[in-house]
Length: 319
Image (cartoon, rainbow, N blue to C red; front, top):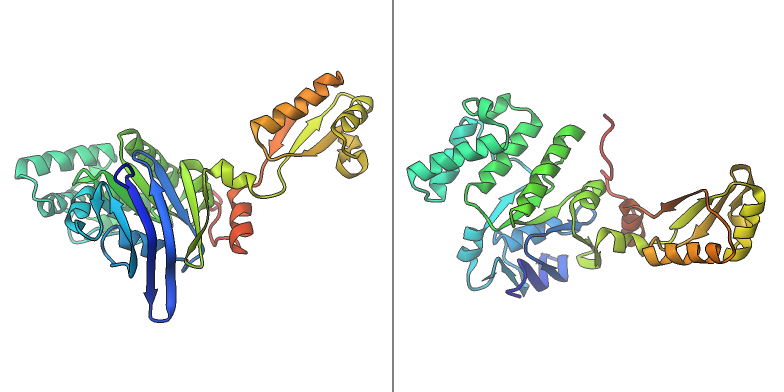
């Protein structure tokens, strides 16, 4: 477990008769982005709260940043940052004062705390707003300040619980860039999100939580390949090439062909090996392909297949 930035085995949590987590296992390598997806009420926030020591599990074991959850909770707290669904910014303090407060809570020497605050204000493009109170900030600025406050203690692992909810597309992409920069610096990110495109863009690995259990884990591409519907769309120069291709690939032009557009649809799992196999069969029959596109199910299809319904916010709001 110590080789993982985050590791959990058999985590369980119930509230009365309601089982929220039913024995989940998680393993997150250092310096990666791990995304936990699931319907509302699936237990995502409970998982974050347990791993960040805010809630005690009923059963199971876990370690975070090399510290055991049961025996070294203080070690975990000193090594992590947490940005929850709701901003922890104090509206009565200026942006700069919020960072000073976090520096004091981390027991940083006064000079070091002031230096750290100035660095973070510059990093998050908040220097001009440093002397203003957060009620004058945009949603994106508040979220950046919230994350900057999380970074004051220089954490090795950061839990981001739906960090971009309510942000406009531009602010969301700014947050994505910030998250990528953190990982490039060696930080490990544990991300929960309702935006499946966000998980697709950011996550090295994804786990889908449903009914208190992990129902699937893998890279975004691995999860997409588990869902039927992937195919290659091949376009040819003329009807003759289209029909020769259908014969070479053993597919029916009536079912998979589009003679009007000189196109053929060939089922595939979207892998490079599958693509090479199709092209090799066409090359063997000397059938040239004018154009091809690979169509794979998206994470929304994966989520629907695994949980039976879509998330409430699978894609960005319209610009």
